[in-house]
Amino acid sequence: MLDVVSVYSAFHRHHHFGPQALPYHTLLYISQGGAMYRLNGGAPLPVGKGSLLWLPHLTVRHMETGAEGVQQHAVRFCLQGAMPGELPDELQKCMSFGPDIIKVDCHARMLTLFRSAERLWLQRSEEAIWDLRAVLCQLIAKYLHYRHQGAAPHTRREVARIEEYLLRHMADPTLSLHHLVALTSWSRSYLIRVFRGVTGQTPMAYLRELRLQRALHLLTTGEFSVARVAELCGFSDPAYFSRLFSRQMGQPPSAYLPRRVPEDALRSPN
Image 1 (cartoon, rainbow, N blue to C red):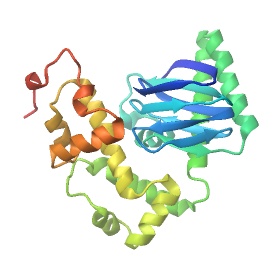
Image 2: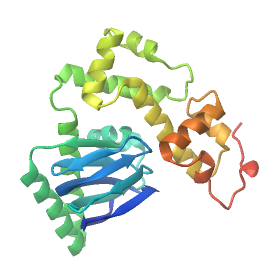
Image 3: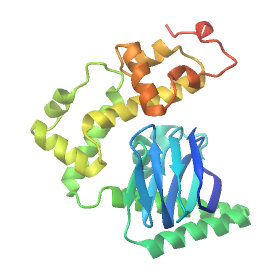
Image 4: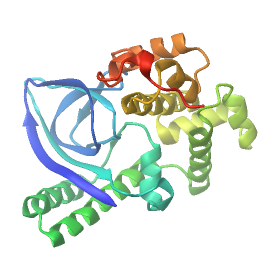
Protein backbone atom coordinates (compact mmCIF):
# COMPACT_ATOMS: atom_id res chain seq x y z
CA MET A 1 0.00 0.00 0.00
CA LEU A 2 1.08 3.56 -0.75
CA ASP A 3 1.56 5.21 2.63
CA VAL A 4 1.98 9.01 2.78
CA VAL A 5 4.42 9.85 5.58
CA SER A 6 4.26 13.65 5.45
CA VAL A 7 3.30 16.61 3.28
CA TYR A 8 4.89 19.99 3.74
CA SER A 9 5.39 23.42 2.22
CA ALA A 10 8.40 25.48 3.28
CA PHE A 11 10.26 28.64 2.28
CA HIS A 12 14.04 28.70 2.84
CA ARG A 13 16.41 31.65 2.54
CA HIS A 14 20.17 31.45 3.24
CA HIS A 15 19.62 27.80 4.05
CA HIS A 16 22.02 24.85 4.01
CA PHE A 17 20.73 21.26 4.14
CA GLY A 18 22.69 18.02 4.14
CA PRO A 19 24.27 16.01 2.84
CA GLN A 20 21.72 13.58 4.26
CA ALA A 21 20.18 10.32 3.05
CA LEU A 22 16.43 10.77 2.74
CA PRO A 23 14.45 8.18 4.71
CA TYR A 24 11.44 8.18 2.35
CA HIS A 25 10.56 8.51 -1.34
CA THR A 26 9.90 12.19 -2.05
CA LEU A 27 8.24 14.19 -4.83
CA LEU A 28 9.20 17.85 -4.47
CA TYR A 29 8.10 20.89 -6.48
CA ILE A 30 9.67 24.35 -6.63
CA SER A 31 6.99 27.06 -6.95
CA GLN A 32 9.13 30.13 -6.30
CA GLY A 33 12.77 31.18 -6.16
CA GLY A 34 15.69 28.86 -6.69
CA ALA A 35 18.36 26.72 -5.05
CA MET A 36 21.36 24.55 -5.83
CA TYR A 37 20.93 20.80 -5.37
CA ARG A 38 23.58 18.12 -5.23
CA LEU A 39 22.21 14.56 -5.44
CA ASN A 40 24.26 11.53 -4.44
CA GLY A 41 27.45 13.56 -4.53
CA GLY A 42 26.99 14.67 -8.14
CA ALA A 43 27.60 18.09 -9.64
CA PRO A 44 25.56 21.06 -8.29
CA LEU A 45 22.29 21.43 -10.20
CA PRO A 46 20.22 24.63 -10.27
CA VAL A 47 16.49 24.30 -9.60
CA GLY A 48 13.85 27.00 -9.90
CA LYS A 49 10.18 27.62 -10.44
CA GLY A 50 8.67 24.70 -12.31
CA SER A 51 11.30 22.14 -11.21
CA LEU A 52 9.87 18.78 -10.15
CA LEU A 53 12.24 16.50 -8.23
CA TRP A 54 11.95 12.75 -7.78
CA LEU A 55 14.08 11.72 -4.78
CA PRO A 56 13.83 7.98 -4.07
CA HIS A 57 14.45 6.46 -0.67
CA LEU A 58 18.09 6.90 0.50
CA THR A 59 18.93 9.63 -2.02
CA VAL A 60 21.72 11.70 -0.49
CA ARG A 61 20.56 15.30 -0.83
CA HIS A 62 22.49 18.52 -0.33
CA MET A 63 20.74 21.87 -0.85
CA GLU A 64 21.84 25.49 -0.61
CA THR A 65 19.76 28.63 -1.03
CA GLY A 66 20.75 32.27 -1.24
CA ALA A 67 19.09 35.63 -0.63
CA GLU A 68 16.32 34.92 -3.16
CA GLY A 69 15.16 31.88 -1.22
CA VAL A 70 13.10 28.94 -2.47
CA GLN A 71 9.51 27.80 -1.92
CA GLN A 72 9.22 24.01 -1.85
CA HIS A 73 6.23 21.69 -1.72
CA ALA A 74 6.81 18.01 -0.99
CA VAL A 75 5.05 14.71 -0.46
CA ARG A 76 7.04 11.98 1.29
CA PHE A 77 5.83 8.40 1.10
CA CYS A 78 6.76 4.76 1.51
CA LEU A 79 5.37 1.39 0.44
CA GLN A 80 3.80 -0.79 3.10
CA GLY A 81 3.36 -4.52 2.57
CA ALA A 82 3.63 -4.48 -1.23
CA MET A 83 6.06 -6.51 -3.30
CA PRO A 84 7.45 -4.74 -6.41
CA GLY A 85 5.40 -6.91 -8.78
CA GLU A 86 2.19 -5.99 -6.95
CA LEU A 87 2.60 -2.25 -7.49
CA PRO A 88 0.72 -0.31 -10.19
CA ASP A 89 2.71 -0.07 -13.44
CA GLU A 90 3.36 3.67 -13.10
CA LEU A 91 4.64 3.28 -9.55
CA GLN A 92 6.88 0.37 -10.55
CA LYS A 93 8.45 2.59 -13.22
CA CYS A 94 9.01 5.37 -10.71
CA MET A 95 10.66 2.99 -8.23
CA SER A 96 13.23 1.94 -10.86
CA PHE A 97 14.51 5.48 -11.45
CA GLY A 98 17.33 7.19 -9.63
CA PRO A 99 17.01 10.78 -8.38
CA ASP A 100 15.78 13.07 -11.11
CA ILE A 101 15.04 16.74 -11.78
CA ILE A 102 12.71 17.74 -14.61
CA LYS A 103 11.05 20.96 -15.74
CA VAL A 104 7.27 21.09 -16.07
CA ASP A 105 5.17 23.73 -17.82
CA CYS A 106 1.89 23.30 -15.92
CA HIS A 107 2.72 25.42 -12.88
CA ALA A 108 -0.88 26.16 -11.89
CA ARG A 109 -1.85 22.47 -12.06
CA MET A 110 1.17 21.33 -10.06
CA LEU A 111 0.57 23.97 -7.40
CA THR A 112 -3.10 22.91 -7.17
CA LEU A 113 -2.13 19.25 -6.68
CA PHE A 114 0.46 19.97 -3.99
CA ARG A 115 -1.84 22.37 -2.16
CA SER A 116 -4.60 19.75 -2.28
CA ALA A 117 -2.14 17.28 -0.76
CA GLU A 118 -1.28 19.78 2.00
CA ARG A 119 -4.94 20.38 2.78
CA LEU A 120 -5.76 16.66 2.90
CA TRP A 121 -2.74 15.98 5.10
CA LEU A 122 -3.94 18.54 7.63
CA GLN A 123 -7.39 16.89 7.74
CA ARG A 124 -5.96 13.38 8.05
CA SER A 125 -9.34 11.68 8.28
CA GLU A 126 -9.68 8.20 6.78
CA GLU A 127 -11.41 9.62 3.72
CA ALA A 128 -8.81 12.39 3.39
CA ILE A 129 -5.94 9.88 3.47
CA TRP A 130 -7.51 7.90 0.62
CA ASP A 131 -7.96 11.14 -1.36
CA LEU A 132 -4.36 12.05 -0.57
CA ARG A 133 -3.13 8.76 -2.05
CA ALA A 134 -5.12 9.57 -5.21
CA VAL A 135 -3.46 13.01 -5.41
CA LEU A 136 -0.04 11.39 -5.00
CA CYS A 137 -0.82 9.00 -7.87
CA GLN A 138 -1.68 12.03 -10.03
CA LEU A 139 1.65 13.64 -9.11
CA ILE A 140 3.54 10.45 -10.01
CA ALA A 141 1.68 10.31 -13.34
CA LYS A 142 2.63 13.96 -14.03
CA TYR A 143 6.28 13.22 -13.27
CA LEU A 144 6.33 10.22 -15.62
CA HIS A 145 4.54 12.19 -18.34
CA TYR A 146 7.09 14.99 -18.34
CA ARG A 147 10.02 12.64 -17.89
CA HIS A 148 9.24 10.92 -21.19
CA GLN A 149 7.80 13.92 -23.04
CA GLY A 150 9.20 14.38 -26.51
CA ALA A 151 10.13 10.75 -27.21
CA ALA A 152 8.06 8.61 -29.57
CA PRO A 153 6.06 5.80 -27.89
CA HIS A 154 8.17 3.02 -29.45
CA THR A 155 11.35 4.81 -28.33
CA ARG A 156 10.06 5.12 -24.76
CA ARG A 157 9.17 1.42 -24.75
CA GLU A 158 12.65 0.46 -25.93
CA VAL A 159 14.34 2.69 -23.35
CA ALA A 160 12.09 1.21 -20.65
CA ARG A 161 13.20 -2.26 -21.79
CA ILE A 162 16.84 -1.21 -21.45
CA GLU A 163 16.17 0.22 -17.98
CA GLU A 164 14.52 -3.04 -16.93
CA TYR A 165 17.45 -5.04 -18.31
CA LEU A 166 19.95 -2.91 -16.38
CA LEU A 167 17.90 -3.29 -13.21
CA ARG A 168 17.78 -7.10 -13.55
CA HIS A 169 21.45 -7.54 -14.43
CA MET A 170 23.19 -4.81 -12.40
CA ALA A 171 24.95 -7.45 -10.25
CA ASP A 172 26.84 -8.74 -13.30
CA PRO A 173 30.28 -7.06 -13.29
CA THR A 174 30.71 -7.79 -17.02
CA LEU A 175 27.57 -5.87 -18.01
CA SER A 176 28.52 -3.35 -20.66
CA LEU A 177 27.19 -1.20 -23.46
CA HIS A 178 27.86 -4.13 -25.80
CA HIS A 179 25.07 -6.11 -24.09
CA LEU A 180 22.62 -3.24 -24.58
CA VAL A 181 23.49 -2.88 -28.26
CA ALA A 182 22.84 -6.62 -28.66
CA LEU A 183 19.51 -6.19 -26.85
CA THR A 184 18.28 -3.55 -29.30
CA SER A 185 18.50 -2.92 -33.02
CA TRP A 186 20.30 0.39 -32.39
CA SER A 187 23.88 1.37 -33.00
CA ARG A 188 26.10 2.21 -30.04
CA SER A 189 26.04 5.98 -30.67
CA TYR A 190 22.29 6.10 -31.35
CA LEU A 191 21.53 4.06 -28.22
CA ILE A 192 23.55 6.46 -26.06
CA ARG A 193 21.93 9.53 -27.63
CA VAL A 194 18.35 8.23 -27.32
CA PHE A 195 18.79 6.85 -23.82
CA ARG A 196 20.25 10.15 -22.63
CA GLY A 197 17.41 12.04 -24.30
CA VAL A 198 14.79 10.08 -22.35
CA THR A 199 16.52 9.57 -19.00
CA GLY A 200 18.98 12.47 -18.86
CA GLN A 201 21.89 10.02 -18.39
CA THR A 202 24.02 7.73 -20.53
CA PRO A 203 23.29 4.01 -20.07
CA MET A 204 26.51 3.43 -18.09
CA ALA A 205 25.91 6.46 -15.86
CA TYR A 206 22.38 5.14 -15.25
CA LEU A 207 23.78 1.70 -14.37
CA ARG A 208 26.30 3.27 -12.00
CA GLU A 209 23.45 5.15 -10.29
CA LEU A 210 21.42 1.93 -9.93
CA ARG A 211 24.38 0.12 -8.42
CA LEU A 212 25.19 2.87 -5.95
CA GLN A 213 21.56 3.15 -4.84
CA ARG A 214 21.43 -0.62 -4.38
CA ALA A 215 24.71 -0.51 -2.47
CA LEU A 216 23.42 2.25 -0.21
CA HIS A 217 20.35 0.17 0.62
CA LEU A 218 22.36 -3.00 1.34
CA LEU A 219 24.83 -1.13 3.55
CA THR A 220 22.07 0.34 5.70
CA THR A 221 20.61 -3.12 6.35
CA GLY A 222 23.77 -4.03 8.26
CA GLU A 223 23.68 -7.57 6.85
CA PHE A 224 26.74 -7.50 4.57
CA SER A 225 30.35 -6.38 4.62
CA VAL A 226 31.49 -3.57 2.31
CA ALA A 227 33.30 -6.09 0.09
CA ARG A 228 30.19 -8.27 -0.17
CA VAL A 229 28.00 -5.27 -1.01
CA ALA A 230 30.43 -4.37 -3.78
CA GLU A 231 30.14 -7.90 -5.17
CA LEU A 232 26.33 -7.96 -4.96
CA CYS A 233 26.14 -4.65 -6.84
CA GLY A 234 28.37 -5.64 -9.75
CA PHE A 235 31.71 -4.19 -8.66
CA SER A 236 34.55 -6.69 -9.10
CA ASP A 237 37.04 -4.43 -7.29
CA PRO A 238 36.00 -3.45 -3.72
CA ALA A 239 38.65 -0.71 -3.61
CA TYR A 240 37.24 0.92 -6.76
CA PHE A 241 33.74 0.59 -5.34
CA SER A 242 34.79 2.35 -2.14
CA ARG A 243 36.46 5.19 -4.06
CA LEU A 244 33.47 5.67 -6.36
CA PHE A 245 30.97 5.47 -3.51
CA SER A 246 32.94 7.99 -1.44
CA ARG A 247 33.20 10.40 -4.36
CA GLN A 248 29.49 10.20 -5.19
CA MET A 249 28.03 10.06 -1.68
CA GLY A 250 30.53 12.23 0.15
CA GLN A 251 31.28 9.50 2.72
CA PRO A 252 32.88 6.03 2.55
CA PRO A 253 30.64 2.94 2.45
CA SER A 254 31.54 2.06 6.04
CA ALA A 255 29.89 5.29 7.21
CA TYR A 256 26.48 3.84 6.26
CA LEU A 257 26.90 0.60 8.18
CA PRO A 258 24.85 0.50 11.39
CA ARG A 259 27.21 1.60 14.16
CA ARG A 260 26.03 -1.07 16.57
CA VAL A 261 27.37 -3.84 14.32
CA PRO A 262 31.18 -4.03 13.81
CA GLU A 263 32.01 -4.59 10.15
CA ASP A 264 34.19 -7.66 10.87
CA ALA A 265 31.21 -9.30 12.58
CA LEU A 266 28.81 -8.89 9.67
CA ARG A 267 27.64 -12.11 8.17
CA SER A 268 28.07 -12.94 4.51
CA PRO A 269 25.43 -15.06 2.74
CA ASN A 270 26.43 -18.42 1.36
